[in-house]
Length: 584
Ligand SMILES: Cc1cc2nc3c(=O)[nH]c(=O)nc-3n(C[C@H](O)[C@H](O)[C@H](O)COP(=O)(O)OP(=O)(O)OC[C@H]3O[C@@H](n4cnc5c(N)ncnc54)[C@H](O)[C@@H]3O)c2cc1C
Ligand code: SF4
Ligand code: SF4
Image (cartoon, rainbow, N blue to C red; front, side, top):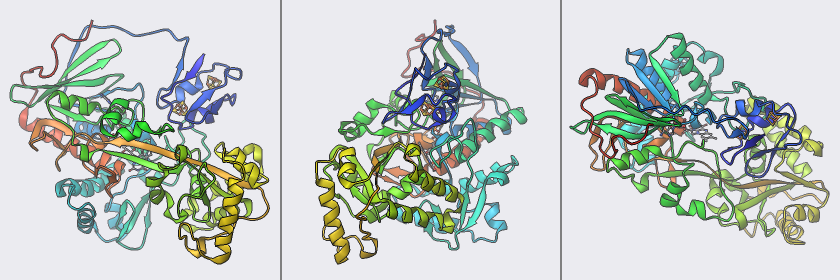
């Protein structure tokens, strides 16, 4: 029997692949209808998080004595960490990648885009080099909390990384450089050029909508790195189901290797450099309780996108060496109200200001002009942290048409059109949408008190007639009355989190720092495992994947220099690690 575990992040791969339509959404994850399932196993093969298990499969664990290996560079974590691995191997180093999961890619496989400020493409297109202005902007925007050396690395290395990515020869097929026309900040983008990744790379995936990956820019980076290892015959050994668990130091406190646990025992890898690219701690209940107790205390469990293996193991390994994370530099990326993104197209519509955000008491709770980031801090105060985005069919259609006619959304036009068609056909509606002919019925479907929704809509319509929103001050131009005829729709939304980031403090060379800010020689930190780009409650303007690729590229380069200067691993002392532990 195939079974979907609670590790499912809801990426839709299995749902869209199942030939029997046996997979259904159950609120927080997918489930298999055993009556329809024919046990073909396809879903388990496409599941990126290894969340689908065959309960009848035999335990094939191969127990072994401790294995000893040697490398120049060990990379722990095969998300953006693959970039460091390829970079070091291209410069002649022997690299071992250890990956805790049975699958490669981590959260990187979900990410859509990274944003270099300036590349050779920008140069060729005659765009200004805005890198120094960007650094100044980022420094000001973050009150100097982030080190200038780290920001500088993020800005310059992302561009160098992209120029290097282009050397593999396929970037022109998937990226487009869009001229935004000026050099100011556009959300996470700084400068006139946006590197757009408009079309999903379809990988065992028929998902029709603009939902989360795999398939976007992060997947492209992963595939390009894996292909490079193969095509260039690079000296990179990849060990899946190997979790880095202890760092080994020599008698001078420099890195001497790492211990990796696998289902059958343990492997000790002797190496002068370890790159920790083990991701964030979004799937560690213990760390979330320790660092952000509110996260686990809410009435409605918060959906978490992180892959199940992102449990903050870098923090544990550093703690063994007496290095503590800095709580003010940990960050949970929260969103809401948003339904689980079965469809980002639908989420776009739900968050437009013409919609009414109504809580489970049947009350509006916010000025709907706030869009996602304005609403997120307040959704937690609503009953069960749930909001329905409500309007009548005619108004929802006009919102969708606005997207269809917006030239900036051209690459998604067909998705809004499909959604509009499906709106007409109840049977095809996406799961988080409720439809009713009357407001009374819609309120009942959403679990609101009898009569509450009708009363609230009547009050809102009076504000629309007056042109004054007496409750929340919404601008008159957005006061669009709800029609007196149905059908009416309610789009479900709740709080959810993308990831929990941070733990390792790093400098501009991506060296991992002790609490006294001195580097641990030979130890580098990458991406979400680090506390480089954020502080508590606030993500810096440089996006996570941007930092992921920049820091991994930088770590790969610096690892090579370090090995060249220091030579092979020294004598191992097993600090924080009991020799003889593990193995069989
Ligand atoms: C749904 C979603 C959408 C996103 N979209 C974007 C976006 O569009 N733009 C953007 O900038 N960012 C985005 N992000 C964030 C971005 O994906 C991450 O910041 C980035 O991919 C982090 O890369 P990483 O290599 O640090 O971590 P990961 O890619 O998560 O890789 C960590 C890897 O380490 C492995 N691992 C963990 N512990 C160990 C261990 N002990 N030993 C060995 N291996 C271990 C994990 O299994 C995993 O494979 C998104 C994230 C999510 C979840
Ligand atoms: S085993 Fe095959 S039929 Fe069953 S749920 Fe998975 S993909 Fe569908
Ligand atoms: S993570 Fe994706 S493929 Fe795996 S069970 Fe969940 S929805 Fe299916």
